[in-house]
Image (cartoon, one colour):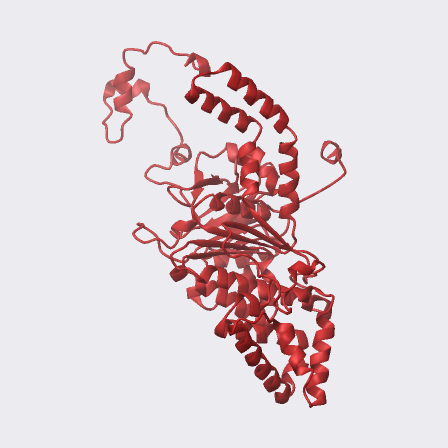
Length: 503
């Protein structure tokens, strides 16, 4: 006790007596009245007798603490953490498991919503890291392609000290003869220099889909990674998005396209390497000038654009679906903002994202005995068009029966609302979005009144409202505890070193 700074003193003779007297249902006698501590009713209520505040899983990764306050912490989330003893643990894979008492839904889908800068990315990347340590296939769709750069930066930083680590390990080998003792000493040295973090980064399969690299062409071509009806369906959707009215305006072109697609798919089944470009190239030979002209237009739009990731000759491999941890980033995308009208400049990026959505569906659907978890960042764009919404719905419906856990990271609670209850979300986190207070409260089935409005509006950065598969709702402060690891989640780069000190 001395080593941890705790003083030990001899107990008073009546302490055991009072210990028993403090048990519930024990009756106090006349002689006990001088040992009673009086308190106000409001103080007694703070003890929350016969109640508990709990959210998340009984067993899982620590992701933060419940925040009991209604008032604001004025940006100091550390005070919020220090004020709470209610830890929040979470294992997302528990959502669709049977025999868990109290669960009101088996829906494995989860969503993280809120405006930029409130902590949404921090929570997302923390959940990704934690769940990628389990026996599941993990996929992160990173439209900004920012994760790889940050992970490689931290890896290089830690590896710079590895020569010192090797020197200390060599010294330990020379000084320690006992093999078991030597093993634990070496492990301690490796932890000191964060080698386990570097080992983890080395196990991630980073894929940066840059259309400027020819080796990436066709990585998301439906005729490369899909088969059957799924291949035909998404091939039609991306081609329709590419040509717009020029695809649907005349039945004659649509019929010709479908015939060409069927022929190319048949060649593919016979073992020939083909892709969507072959479909349009066949149409160039049409005797109908309208058909050949539109095929030529499509080929010209595709050339030297992001769409070469989707439209190819099928010579390159698709993205590997068997890697245990994959971060799939796409460079050069120009996605519209959530409230921005879609322009022609956005369309090629949307086509790439539609193909990515179908890749996600296939990733989660292939093996129903294998847990898969997918994080789709910037997911709001799916609801920008009918095509995107239908792809999103197909991704969500893979769900429970296929052991697929789909997470959507988006900006507005409106992006996760659905008329179909079977495709709602079993777990949801809502960070502060000042313009959507009432909408968020209604989604969480909370009363829209001054107290709950303040409870939501007063959240500081790093806090969110959480609802779990047991139907419990709480305001929590996110915390992944290990700064040596959480530096991986940083997304803001700056050369203004003194900004924090000045502020």
